[in-house]
Image 1 (cartoon, helix red, strand yellow):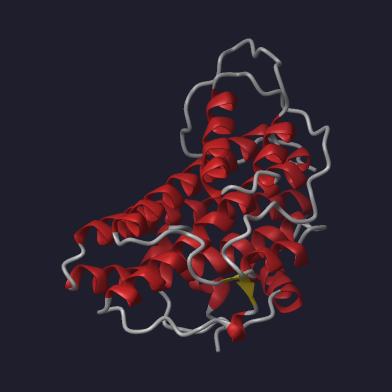
Image 2 (spheres, rainbow, N blue to C red):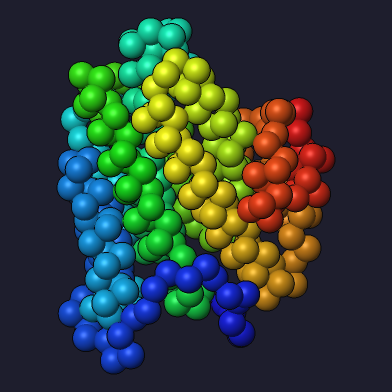
Length: 284
């Protein structure tokens, strides 16, 4: 798919110069996707990133990724329109509901990162796998941090229902790498840049500085995740002769069922390389 090297990715570490081929990156991705237990999935994600950096995973794609990732028995998955209201954030119940929703996003984000590697990594240079393994490890760390905050409040991931909207977007784009990049990091994760600062501020106003600090960490990392999606989308467009903004508008119209609604965190989006040339035209 690519004839040359992409723009330099963020530094992710050094691999050993002579890799020991003990497994493949596809096997590692498949393991993450087929692990149901949330804690075990997060640990498998971080292990895969370490194994890649240590040179113990071959850059081969010898397994087909599952149509759906494994899921624990809880939480119950509901359509978005059947999700119960979270309640006021000022109550402990409301704080738990909000953190549970964040935990669900981060749990799904682990699978999204490893699915993009296992499903599309063979179409890209290995720097693509470098980037998305880093993203997957960071999503696993985010999930662990939010799960810890839930435990501190006497709750756990799975105690409340959750929706499956993120994975529905993955299913919609499972046959097209450019569509996946356009929708998941550049629409769904970019939306996280818009809403997270206000949620963080509300936790801080309640005196829950630990949750606010976790959300600060997530926001900072997610800017990098959106930037990774933008960079590879632009690189793929340049290689194939597409105009990025025009193609993105077309892919969003075809594959995204919702609406892009303001307000937008223009500053964070700009840091991620997602300029208003992309989203201002289609905002409603």
